Length: 177
Image 1 (cartoon, rainbow, N blue to C red):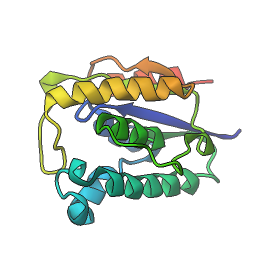
Image 2 (cartoon, rainbow, N blue to C red):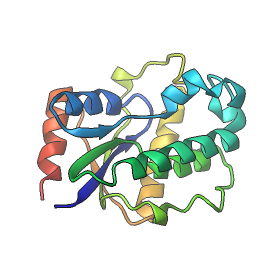
Image 3 (cartoon, rainbow, N blue to C red):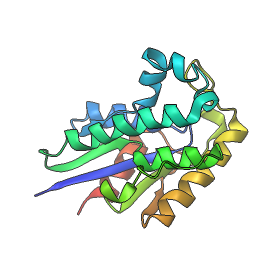
Image 4 (spheres, helix red, strand yellow):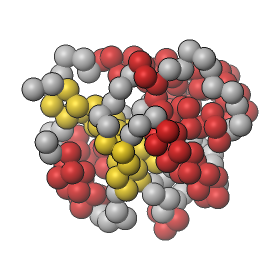
């Protein structure tokens, strides 16, 4: 058996992290979101709570950290669920109308061809210190995610707006070989 890097993606505040945390508590291998942690610990010099102020250097840092995260699981087998991927960096660059760095080559980091996308969900949307985008921006982010993943050959499966437990079961069932 080999590793299957399965991506959970979507706009901010769509329930990805809650699902990742639940999958981990169920014993599944997961790779957590790194942007929020970076903004909190290191990002103040790169835009602080609003990474869009310095999107290019912020994106370079996130690309580097997600690259390291991608390689960190090379010795694992089976499903590993990622809260976002390197493709998300590219999508955010598109939303910010920035030129994507030529070194950001997603072909060097192949994830499983099926990606789970969490749709915008206004009822659970909330701003906080690291989530700077208003809900209207999350719609643009969602569209950019769909476009970026699709243009790079990924098949998107929309995760239904259900309880965390039901969403986990949906993803587990759809991830089976």
